[in-house]
Image 1 (cartoon, rainbow, N blue to C red):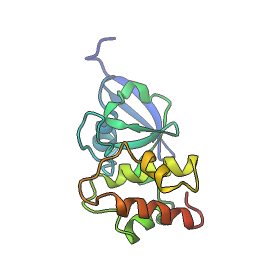
Image 2: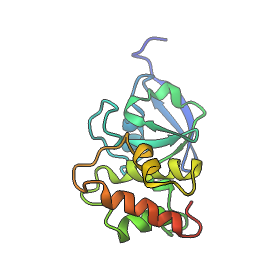
Image 3: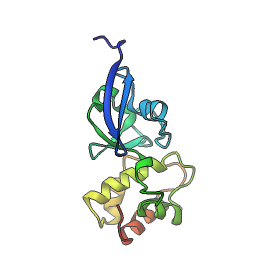
Image 4: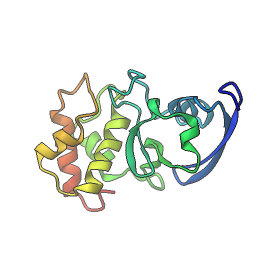
Length: 161
């Protein structure tokens, strides 16, 4: 097989089994946005520096712009579209709306997935832990205070995740 030959990749995205015929080194962000039509995942820098494209990949927080399609074989992937359940926003999404954590929207999906990852590991984080947990996600609009407030508020709600 050469890099120019397409491969079949089967994975689970937001609980749904998906099959893609793609090039092995195609970026996962492109597969998600173009082939799966899941445009909630945003591309910021394309270099893994900003976190806008963050997703959960086998329950780990990753930058989808850095993951080659071939690595997605058999993976469990959660994008922002998979966070709400039955048209009901998750507590973290509601908190981002209520506390102004979402501004222009470029960083918001990745920031929410980073917050989910953090809250799964530490359900009641301190503000310092939130700062560290979200450090891989850059925002140019909020100054971060409203994002931190949103995460703290979500911790206080029942059924955070």
